[in-house]
Length: 83
Length: 286
Image (cartoon, rainbow over all chains, first blue to last red):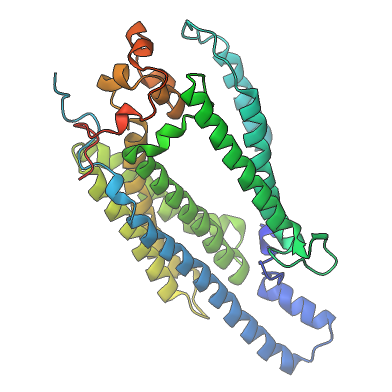
């Protein structure tokens, strides 16, 4: 999970938890007032990233419908083969 | 955990030694050139994708090695795909000349088989995506422990198990195409519910309903796809279909029935189309 928590997204920005982000901000000496707004916008982009990923999956699901015509209507083996 | 798996595998290997092999009439010939070309092709593509975060996809990243101004990733993927194309040509040649290919390219002309495999591919893509994204939300955004995250995923696994086992049991004559379509639509619906409820300030309880819907969809697909794919070639036809089925099926060997001498003689080596791709009672497509 620790590894996943540091998953680097394609653009190279790490997907880190809020507490880690806060720790980084502390280390960088960002004042508390600014931290609040940075964290809020960070949380926004986290959610936006997750929603984007999930919508790509939903698009894939719809694309796969195009190939379902190749799947038979009867259960395999249910119709006796003609002699 | 890992040590336990190793022990299980060793036990399986040990027990498998006792399983008697089906007597083989002709000694099978392993296509070493095919092994070499296909594994290098796949390795290059996979390596290119894995290194994309270091090398960049098309334009090289700062300080990364590049060739002719392009990232190595795109070169590796292109070279790998080219090798895979060579592999395909080589396999076609082996099939045409009646030798034993690693995989018979004519299998890809079979509608039912390719339909099942493509749907499997999409199922696995979506499954991998869900099992990556949802834990990311639960453990990183919400900061849940791995155990709590796992518990939130249980509804998906339960729904999947119940549907995957229940459909063949209670609806044994279900229309596979309809079940697959319902399953895919459930996947999409579950994803949409999840997207709609994901917002800043959402808590872990929002994944409950989507997990059940997505698990239902995955279960519906799992209940049909294996059967559709493996039985793409009906056993009754095996004497006509012959060897491609044995090589193409994940489980072709044990399921395609006993070897009969009629099989090898009924399939002239120069025949290029696979007989199984003709419409048959169990492969009706429209």
